[in-house]
Image 1 (cartoon, rainbow, N blue to C red):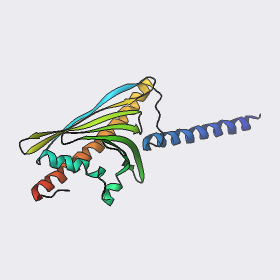
Image 2 (cartoon, one colour):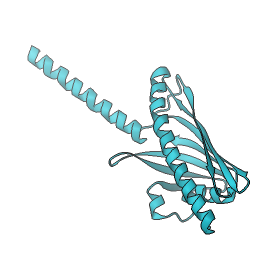
Image 3 (cartoon, rainbow, N blue to C red):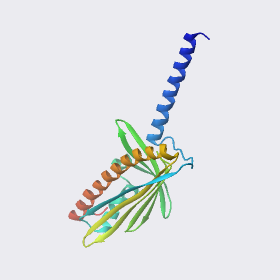
Image 4 (cartoon, rainbow, N blue to C red):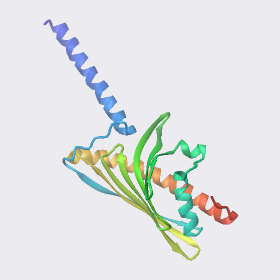
Length: 195
């Protein structure tokens, strides 16, 4: 093999590595590739995020669970799609915009304990393990909603760094959802509107 052929082979390998790396990264970020190796697992907390909502707990619970109702609005279908429904649990795909047209898809089980709790468990996503909950506590005519969770990654420190990146974006998405829940709950309470 001539030096020129060796250089071409090295360049081809490097280009292949870059394409593979970029594809793997996009697959992980969007949730298309879900790696659960079970080695070197590290967990970290998500939240807590506390929100005070000027609406009764039942109204807030209805707003939180609205995207999972039998009939969801067209706007919500772009964010949540129920894949399977059981008597006490459902399986839903959640869509989150990342950048431009790129969006992440997570698949989670969702359990409802009316009117005080909603639990989520990740089935497929950018990390192998996430459990979360929304706890609703009545406080006079208001509601205190507390979000807590735990996110886990594999591969020791490397996975921990990935988990920190994912957790930061995850919490931003949750905070945006809680802001929307607050606005909708308070509007429904003021106007007397029920789903």
